[in-house]
Amino acid sequence: MTSILILHPGEMGSSLGACLRCNEHQVGWVSHSRSAATRERAEADDFYEYPSLDRALPIVDVVLSICPPEYAEAIANSVVALNFHGIYIDANATSPMTAERVAALVGENYVDGSIIGPPARRDGATRMYLSGSKASFVRDLFDGTFAAPTDLGPSVSAASALKMCYAAYTKGTSALLVNIRALAEANAVTDALLAEWAISQPDLHARSERTGPSVSRKAWRFAAEMREISSTFAAKGLPSGFHEGAAQIYERLSDFKDQPPATTIDLVSTLLKQD
Image (tube, rainbow, N blue to C red; front, side, top):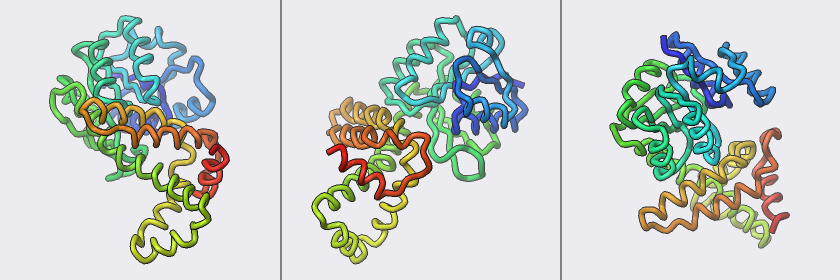
């Protein structure tokens, strides 16, 4: 049995912790300064409660960081500052450059991770990609679970690079669709656009309607991810402005956090109000 600390169990992190619990590992969380919703998730999956980070780190073997990408480096710094020497998994949606900075901070026990798909609560929906010299160890922790782990080899940033490529399309085009719908509404051609889509792009209307409920509650944390993607393109000499624009779209939609899923029309209205 391996002891793993989840920092911090949101919907995805708690599902990964549940996967680890299914493999009979001990999973813990830090309760200091965390929300009631975090406590509810941790208790639902029977995670062990540590009162503070400094009390947890001398006891656990592995730390799994899964948080909004803008906090990834700060969380790694806080763990390293407390002299943790176990395996550190950064499973955040960050650029390869951010992953490399965290790897340099953590040292040889760093494992790069990325998650594609929804929270790992059912078979065949979620994939966990891992890279780094200790990736095989982490793969074995999750072996046979809903997280479906894959070892991408020794690179300290391959998992992050894959996530950036994948999310560049999925979340990038979601932002584009909402912005297109807003543009059509601003020019009073929505009905004509939807009629043309029905003829020439029959999937787009339905997809654009699904986009609102899909992204509204999570838009607040997609903005930073879009900027990580933008910097990934720029680092390879590729145009990066599209995803900077996507970041601005998601920032405009950030007030939908903690609200019921919104319609695409709601998102369109919000974008246009901030014009």
